[in-house]
Length: 321
Image (cartoon, rainbow, N blue to C red; front, side):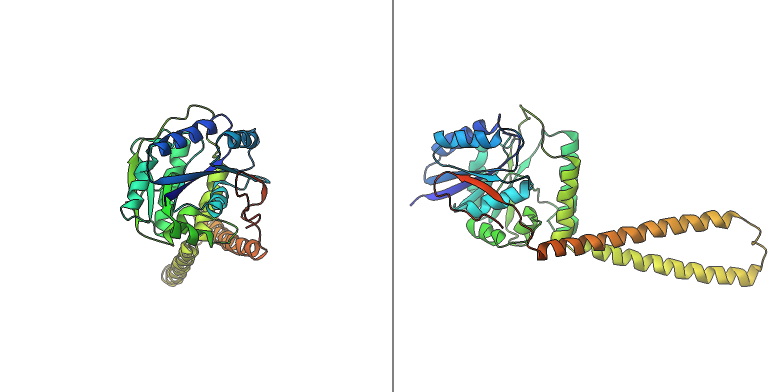
């Protein structure tokens, strides 16, 4: 019996690009023997005609399943919906804009078949904008520092994983999914393969600065307590500095008496310290509040996503997660 490959494609503003991606997947799979496949497209509340495009494509491509969100929940929520719907022995996630080459999916499949639990595409030359590349670099740094990603491992939106890894990822019911965090807590048998990265031919990236900040916050707060430990360490350091400065002030008063009392410069220094310490305290309190708020939202069972419609064969799927 042939193994099944599931392709997961989060879709946002991709009415003009998705058809080419689907066709490329089908052409590639026709060249690979021993595998069957399915394609799961998730419309993440796109404001254009992406959902209509998915419905039209499903009438031509019989292996296509479409999931339509009730509103925009973000790329990682869309990935989770696709992962839960997928049935493949190997699951491949890729972008909807054609920049991640579907015709090189065989490289990811080969890496899985040779023993890896998960494999990420690595690009020698990325064709993203400067802003997007900066966001990716920050995401790499954050994943390394906060959740223990190996420094030599490159992560991207184009990756593949074995079924057991996907099943473990799908057990996560929290309101703020972060896919690389779920992969890393499941396995460390992860490798990279080199693929080409194409320039975007149509449209622009759907990632805005606010979405990147939201993604980083998910990584900070959902899978790591490092920020809280940093806040605790910073508080301890400043407390020690304040204590030592107090000792210094007492000694200076005993040794020099009132000789320096006429100098007004101390007021500026005092205000600088107060403003700096006040800002640090507010930052730490805000960080703790972020953790508490997200815990509260998760306890209230805020859904990762809400599905409005499903099309394609075998349309039974979890509605709320």
